[in-house]
Image (cartoon, rainbow, N blue to C red; front, side, top):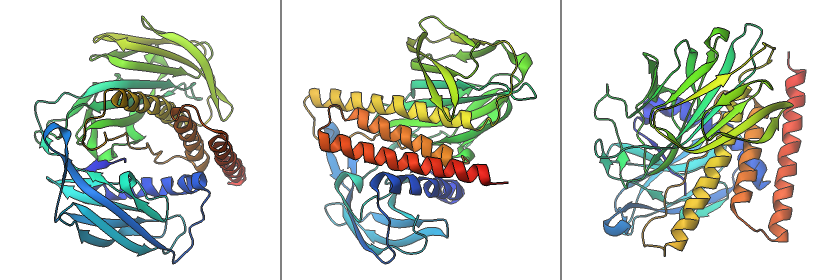
Amino acid sequence: MRTVVLTNPRRWWPTFAAALVLLAAPAAAQTGEVVPLGQVRTANGHVQRPGAANAALPLAHQVVVLHRVGQDHAGPIDSVRTDAAGAYHFTYKTSGAPDAVYFASTRFAGIAYFTAPFQTPHVSGADADIVVFDTASTGITLRLAGRHVVVGAPGADGVRTVAEVFDLGNDSNKTLITRDSLTPLWTAPLPAGAISPAVDGGDVAPGAVSFDDNEIRMFAPVSPGVRQLAVSYGMPADAFPLRLALPTGAAALEVLLEEPTATPVLDGLAQQASVTAQGRAFKRYLAQNVPAGSVLRIDVSAVSDSGRTRFVAGVALAMAALMLAALVFALRRRGRRAGGRSGPAPVAAVAPVLIGATRAEQLRFELARLDAAFAGEGLADEARTARHRADRAALETRIADALAEERRAP
């Protein structure tokens, strides 16, 4: 089960709907399914909240809304109330654009919670369940589970695109909300001189983040689990060597540099195998348990043309997804070894979505997620391995087609 949490659906709905439209085609590529119009589908789930000792408590008489999002139109299509056991049921027909996705939502304590898009005709169990939480504005400190920094090569004007993804962990059993509209829930330093900072994908809508006084300020609520905030900005040539402050440290820090001569400087940062995407190579570095107050310095040298810079944000999210999938898998394994207390399953991270990316970039990101999910399963039998290879081949074909279409575009 993956749950998205939003406080003001009316304000954020256009961005959220656009993100789900982008997610629809890659999801279909993974399942190999072509959705026929008029197909009868069902969704059977429960709405629950954690009780004492994390026991799952059903929410009766809770309104659950079924949504449809497609390239043609988007909006709610049905609603029901849960029964005494917190259960809900939908029967619906597919309609309109074949890329449409369907999902359910409910509101609790002023916050809207969404399921992930339904990817099979008949969805039940964890894929349809929604766990809601009480809220708190104090007493909870967000943990920086990971920070991912990608620095692209400079463009013709010398400006380098920097993309950062922050993995924000809420280890409590309550959704953390802001104390008021002026007090951000979480902040991080923004380098002085940053050009056009913006939210670029991830789990947090652009309207929930502001960039003021060299600071990233996030106002979006964070439910239990890990959420990703992704931002990108430009840095002029004279801003290098670039210094990025890590006031709270980080459980894990990942740095990717496109320039062969660029070098990161930080105690404990170790070089890993390089990664390549769309013909662009990135040197990769990792550090663990970075202490609070550390400063990452990035040294560069000669200027060279980088071509399109938007792709840097795609690389950041793809690599962050791989690391986060490994983190969630490790936490689940640790939970199973601990003996398995009763109660709702921990909320896994919402799948990041590349808003504003090209079709090829979105599909490459989905390929990274596909590989991460397969790797997280551990040892797989021959049939599962063959299915993964087939799904991967299908995505690679779609990527090649998308790249060919981009080259033909004026």
